[in-house]
Length: 141
Image 1: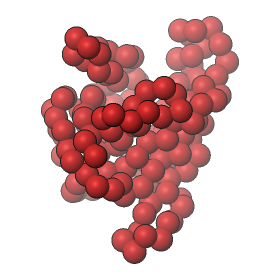
Image 2: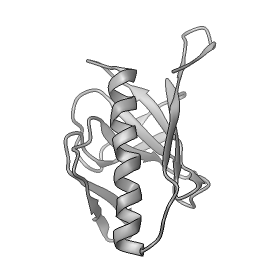
Image 3: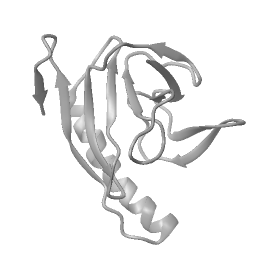
Image 4: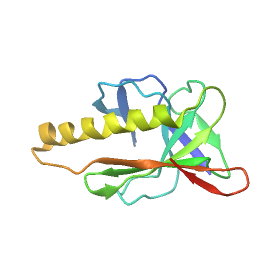
């Protein structure tokens, strides 16, 4: 699978890829603590490509990775639509506790973003992290 990085680690801006390059989707009160991208050529329930979190060093926007599998998934609901994020681990610090804290705050931020931008009450919720153990056994946090 080809993973494309849209939003580099530590960015306050969430980007999306368009035909003309990358554009800012919104500004977050929290910097991303991971590289944020997508699996090229896929489609998720929200109509966009499948989201991927790449844990490791900061990667430039537009950089790509090839992977055969994911190390886990962040279960997330965005405006009542399933919007899970696959997890890829490269190297360095990783903490499911920190990721869970980040996505709880992110869900709250998204509720406010929908209220301000679209004048609607949206259901956004972090629902846990599933980590794949090396032997293929799943572990839910």
